[in-house]
Image 1 (tube, rainbow, N blue to C red):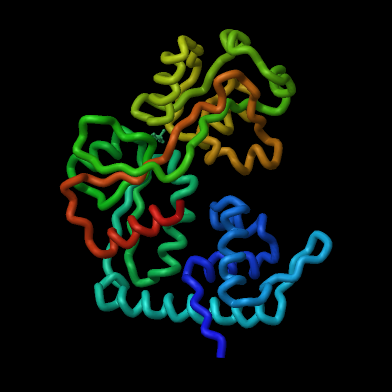
Image 2 (image 1 turned 90 degrees about the vertical axis):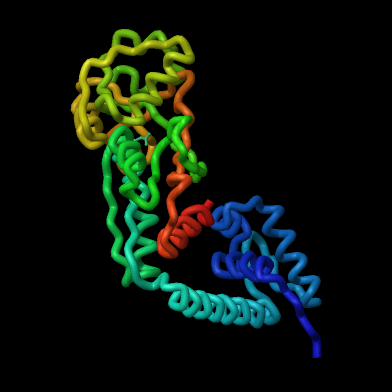
Amino acid sequence: MRKIKPTLRQLQVFESVADELSFTRASEKLHLSQPAVSIQVKQLEEGVGLPLFEHTRKKISLTEAGSIIHRLSKTIRNELEDAGEQIDELMGIQRGRLDVTVTTTASYFTSRILADFARKYPDIAISLDVTNRENLLKQLDSNQCDLAIMGEPPEGLDLESTAIMENPLVLIASPDHPLANRRRIPVEALGDQGFVFREPGSGTRAAILRVLEEKGMSIPITMEMTSNEAIKQTVQAGLGLGIVSRYTVELELETGRLVELDVRHFPLRRYWYLVRRRDKQLSPVAQRFESRVLDRE
Ligand code: PGA
């Protein structure tokens, strides 16, 4: 009998290719390069001693050996998940409470992360507080939340922060704005436009003003509002331009209700961070949430 000794990593990558029947889609899903995916599958094939995929024109399908390994990888994954759940139970992770605070802008994607977590741990009570950066920093200062998700936290506070994903700030306009169809708009063209900004205390606002200052640019703030939704509506109504996180306008850009302007220096580059107090004793539930967020990237 042939003894096969695949690694868990090989099985995970193989399973993703087999589910998608595409090396490209699997590499996107796994956040890996395509050669990295191919190497894992090739090593697995060498260990098995037979090809696992049949390559025909533009399509791949599983060979018989591939189907056997696909079933094996699913069984192992299910068993590992069951074991993980039992260990969670032993550690007291199945029940408890999680307090997360996120900035207004971060809430556009954190709901998805929390929903995943809630599905996995339905008996954990989750509390999500959404506020602007200034209030969030006050909460961290007075130890009111387990974990926070926000733009880059200030230096000098005793915080531990890890970048989890990019947060591009884009310049938005209504589709019938005179600049909407222009390419490579010079920065000077923004000088006589009105801008709708977030309120003082917003991290997005602070980041924009800081970056513009670094680049020696200044733009006129004609309106201020405390919500991204209000900015989007105002810009859509043609009352000015806005600079917002791309996460807040994904749908509007997709449906053409807003357009992203092509201006030098934009999008401004920022990152989202998972943040906690360095001296915070995280509960097992909060530790599990932290590791799930960090593992995603
Ligand atoms: P805010 O968030 O603009 O909603 O405060 C951005 C950030 O976290 O910096």
